[in-house]
Length: 378
Image (cartoon, rainbow, N blue to C red; front, side):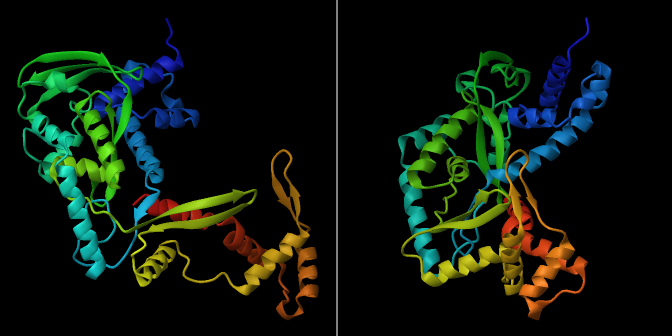
């Protein structure tokens, strides 16, 4: 019996998950399918799928990296470099009196959180009464066993990092079956929903998909409660629970936002700062944000005049496919020269080029949007 294309892609997905040791993201897989990225594999047999599995893995990981672009809309307020409180995935440390105040406040909150019964219980029962080194913490959050197995399946094991095994079934409907091979052989089967666990690594936020009832799912829920209670990022709270690293509570943050209208984008920077933060620090931070966005200079009076001129001579069509319509460039140039005799154009190609550039810089801002994506990817 001939298999359907959906069956083939489902088999391909299961193979990829076994190769990665973790589930494939639902939305990302669907995104790749809708855009024809998986069409090449739809009619392949078992042998061909196995042969091309490395290509599928490489392509999926590439799109997974791109998908992370939207995961970090918020960033720490970029202030002066120097010695001070800092945690992986955060902005630069702060100096002087500001840094000292942030350090004191952060240490105080960490001390309070450290005494919470849930924190002490997790460290005692899951981590064996200790905290982990950085290297151990990375192994912990990337463990496919800890991402799927509930705590009751691991009872009696004093060191969860030493547990080894294999995932037999990991389906999108939530079905999980795994086999532990070390320190003893044990099987577990059940169903679960999927969640995302965030953690910091090398100055950025990483994400791993975990089963809600798993050890890492338990870690995510506890970290989420701590983050909401103490004003931390969820990744900071995860690292605090595992390593006891004090989360740095930034006195300010900023995010990129946009106001969209047909044919236009109005970008805005939204800043949130503590009321005690010195005005000079806020101003310096804002200048840094502008430089990161490539907004170091104004667009110029001529560009603004060109956009205003085009606004008076365009026709807007919003029915069906939206579009802007202008008179021929030569006719527009004549009208411009009549209304702006001190800024005349003789070359119609130069006039058209300057008009397009003015629209791009003042209204459309595609380059600025691209710059945002570069910043989010860091």
